[in-house]
Image (cartoon, rainbow, N blue to C red):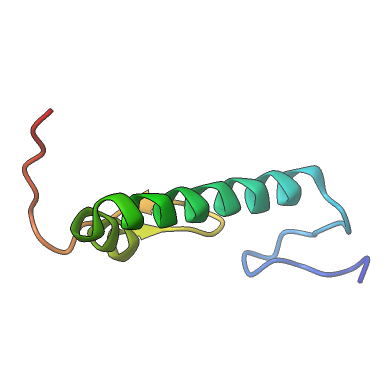
Length: 69
């Protein structure tokens, strides 16, 4: 395990602080999305389909959306 590498070839250490932070951020985003789905199902489903999580995160809408605040 101590020689494990990520998909990018970066050496990963067991219990690496960066990995812990990435997992915590992903958990927080997923739980927030579930709360949004309960309050606004249409918005929640759109965000679940558009937000990609992992080593890099991003919002990639399939259709053009005009946001009004």
